[in-house]
Amino acid sequence: MKWPLVRWDEGAVELGWVVVGEGNSYRLRKLTKDGDDNAVIYVDQAVMNVLKWQKERQDAERKRLGSAWTDHDLVFARDGCKLYRGEAGGPQDPEKVSARWRTLRTRLRLPEQFRIHDWRHSKVTNDLGSGRTP
View (cartoon, helix red, strand yellow):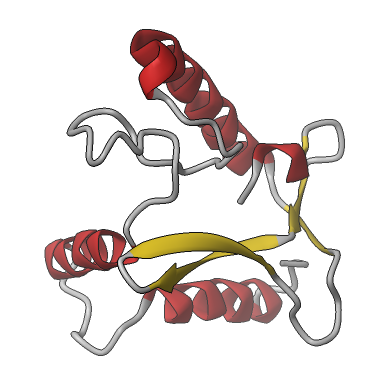
């Protein structure tokens, strides 16, 4: 996600970009899902609070790193914990995100075949089943 796509006043997020691997690097690609290149999801206040916390944390990290931060306007950018090729602020490595997911999945005792994508679908299914709008 990119910060300009967070609609703070509406409690919504535009789904406009995705990070894709390209050799040993990554790039942002415009996301189109089901032909809708401006899909918007509305989230509850808890999600907006997490995004606000993330923005504050990231602003502090950006300030701490100064010129070592390359701003791509990414909500979940690479931080400066271990500066990797000077790419703080750039896209996170998808393999490392997957590794973190596997660790979390193990801690939660979820089946090995349970993917991040499945979690999203489970949330929507559960919301619909309880009569809520996802």
